[in-house]
Length: 460
Image (cartoon, rainbow, N blue to C red; front, side):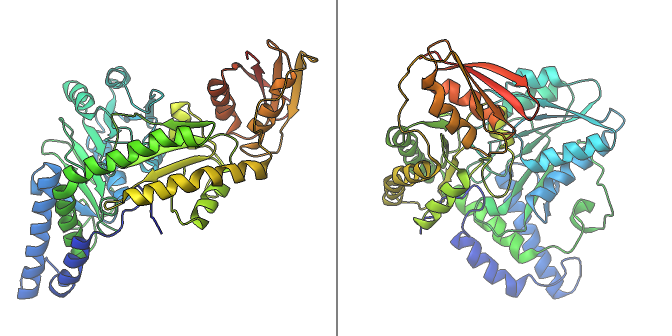
């Protein structure tokens, strides 16, 4: 059964498994103790730290291990903000950061601080100059992911880090998705990552803080990990994480070329095999193993279930998944279609045969889900009998409001309007996206007694 969700968690690398099993026998003791077993454990921990620091591009004494990538992000933001509290309590971040960064920003705001979200373009990338404009005299920290976890777009980290450094503001880089592919360039100040993203065991995060960055760990601390990550170190998992990071880096160049070709095949084929599909994310400046596309008139949760039944494990940023009833904040910030969203992220070793099997199954699965939802198969003829129509989609979830719009757009003449009444949050994003895809005019959103009224003018 092909597993195509490496961006969530990559399969355990064989080197990680070997290192984990070996260090279970050697690294179980307390590395803070002076007896033989403690010294052996400390040597394993130090070797893992040196290997991880080499991969990150920092000094070993600048890097600590945490219990997860999320914990590393939370500690990085709280520690940097506290260390620079005399400067202010303002945070700058992109609108497409991982939820761990957004949660930290919300906590800062709840505690009386503030943050500014820098917008992204339709490919999901920020403009480094926009970071410069967002910096204020009271900005204590800026945050920017190295590559987006949902659409794969790589961010201009080096340029942004330079702008922040010139302004005297440290930049935190969330490198969870990219660190397995290579080091992060530029004058960044703090960096976080998560081992299970590159084939290491879950429960190991990295936090690197450059020398000279003011940093004050928050909460109770102890003597471990330079006081930046309290608690007994999971040495076997840490050793496995460092060993697998070194291993995937050694394979990265070859896998980059191979997986990038497979992803290019998906990007090209999907648009031709499945009608009404939008492939999102930067086609060039992107992670080599990840592609995301959205399908009109599709219930995302059902689509995922049907692909799972067909033998393919994929993910989604769709508003229609069971984990959330609101649109993906990444797709929302990009202004692209959110319904029927599929993220395919290929683990190392994925074969061309597996990708072709997926492409062979996908069109039939999408067609079946659309038929089940009553989606239109072709544009309706235009009797030009009514200048305007109102579609009541109140109380109906994505993608039904867009499906109902598509069914009736042909019943008004060119220049006529269709008003969709909807209270599903996804409609605010998906109706304009549908207009862009079908070359119709999105007039705008108007208030209504319930929900909102979305007005569309027929152009074709």
